[in-house]
Image (cartoon, rainbow, N blue to C red; front, side, top):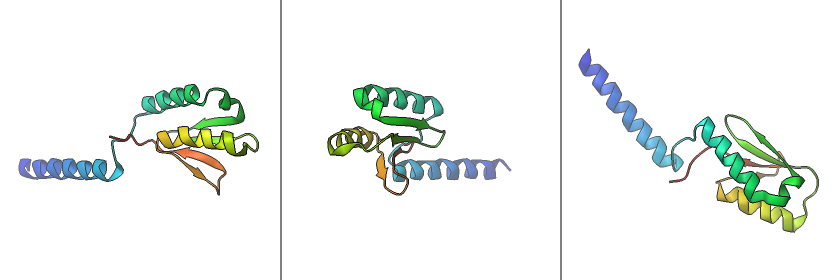
Length: 102
């Protein structure tokens, strides 16, 4: 019985290391999302007035309140890309998934 438990633990560790390697890091905890959200607010600066920040346990969404224009859109996109996010044209918002780069 102990042998099976050891094999299961080894398999779990192996799977976790593969997940971390493929995802580019470890999953950020809920507290980590709040920290990233605070950093986003700071980095967006005055552009924060043009967007809404929506966060859940799975992702952070940045939705424009109105048409941003190319200059503001580009500056927001640069900040979002820094955190591994992207623009989703179908949902018309930026999405940052809670993955930490190593």
